[in-house]
Length: 382
Ligand code: NIG
View: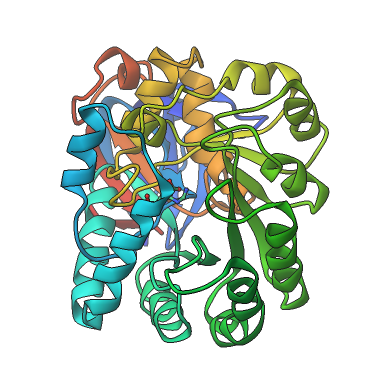
């Protein structure tokens, strides 16, 4: 059954040839887009919806979340707002709560956040393990996540859990843990930061991932300058995430690589860090993605619209750059840019309709829930 979406006031396609179109239409058939172009030349379809001048864009691609968790860190957040610094050690609090939670509790928390994201226009979600930090809990995190989201990343190397020295824990991650988790995940990630894993330990984790056929991602340069970006680029990781503290040579390395710089502005606000220099990255020619980093410690939001508004209002990205980074950029960070984050014949029918005439309203009306309708794989989910 084909469906014509017509009366589109502004269509953002992210396709180089189609670009952004006024007075546009889309035709969906099953899970795919089969036609996109001016409304005046749209083909007939089995049914039609008139969007009455609203803006349409690809669904948000949230390429960085940590949704497998239990518990709450409100007290830590409140202390931070009262002047305490963010410390990665807070991760251990969530590890304790997650280990104690039942499978049903973890699934309920995860599906609540996935539903919350979808209702705000997110149609593709990556999530990570990383609050288990032992073999059974990392394994169950991966298994539960793979039922709920589109892509799962193994982040056994999130923090050295209490009772372990770093090198022995890296051996566990690169041995028994990766063996158990690999069948359930597509990616491996490591938190390369002072207080988590240093450069050589991070490299060992990524090499083990590569040996097991996993794609590589890195948490890097979040809390200070460090080796994360350099390592990610050298190992041709798909993405290095955070990028809050970048040297000139980090920016140049990213610009001359295939590694996406994934920026997480909600996290930087919540941890009272500076916002990353998106313009330096874009001017140098790096590919930039925006993601929510939804997790209970450093960034407890599923709102990609908030990230886009922050990127525009505080990081001086244009609305078009920010929207592209939160759709196509996220897809590129997951190496899926031919099928998602883009609207053209053959792409996945992941459609976000705003109750506004243009994407400019995402920054012009920050904090206002502008999602009017969402189709995911061709099915209306909101
Ligand atoms: O991406 N940087 C490390 N991991 C998460 C933080 C998780 C937490 O504090 O619980 C992040 O910000």
